[in-house]
Image (cartoon, rainbow, N blue to C red; front, side):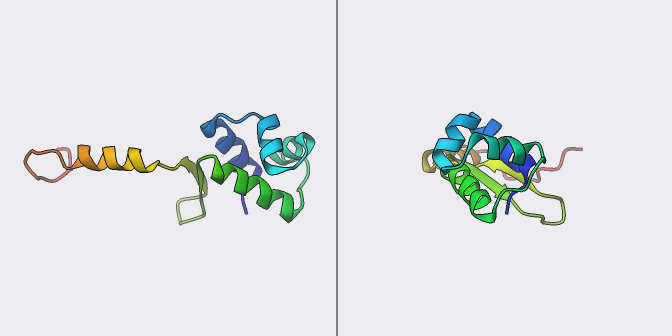
Length: 99
């Protein structure tokens, strides 16, 4: 389950307004406002709908892995391929450590 802060951060990352998220998730704008401002806890179904809509739009939620919870953007297949090409461009293989 995501938190209100994660919801707010994910919306910013994927450039979704509350209105757009409300339509995508099928919940009211007031539910999103109260969730993000920690004024009320929506039902588990509403939180799941919000999380699903945000993930479909490109957000990836990070659970507590010892370094805290968070959210990031996922890469598309073409972006991952371009990154792979850049990472494997010639040059001497060496340590990434900076002296």
